[in-house]
Amino acid sequence: MKNNLVKIVCMGDSLTEGYCIEQGSCWPALLDSNYGFIFINSGICGDTTSGMLARFSEMVIAHKPDYVIIMGGTNDISFNISDNQIISNIKSMTRLARHHNIQSVIGIPPAFFLPDHEEDPSFFIGLREMKQRLVSFDKNLRHFIETDNQPAIDFTIDMTREMYLADGLHPNEKGHDLMAKNALFHLNELLELD
Image 1 (cartoon, one colour):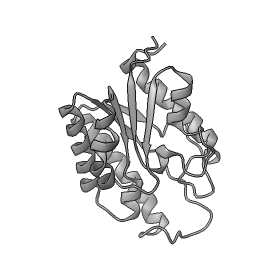
Image 2 (cartoon, rainbow, N blue to C red):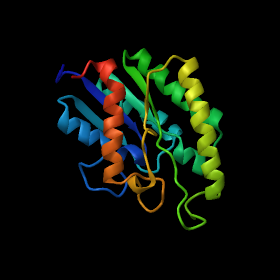
Image 3 (cartoon, helix red, strand yellow):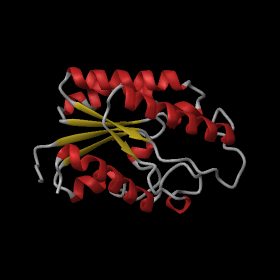
């Protein structure tokens, strides 16, 4: 059932903000405009989980939401930050949320498809190593979700290469449309959407 009082903050990086796609086409905006809930996009391109944790009070708690969807880690990995540190930052955000009576939901980032070119100078590690690290992070994040009993949204479901920009990392409009559908599928039971 739709309830305009339910407020959800989407905390993340470019995968949430909507890198290089038309305004209003990112998955939080699609959910906000189509399902009668208030979705606030607190994604910032290039942010790490440390940055997300640092701005959590200002960009999540200050909105007094009912839920926060936390999705990060991809940029951390490009800086070669360990999975343990990334997950520690995510765990800290869930604890801050809990302290303020906000239900956290962990977003599992969509897969990375290696682009045609071999390297990207914006990354601190090679693309193949980044691909391997992201696979490892996915496994470790899922383990944290299970052991910490966290609700989650799996943004990897049915994502294919044609749903990405040329870099293989950022979803295009079609990819964000599927991400919105994946989010709605996982939130359905939690929020009792029809």
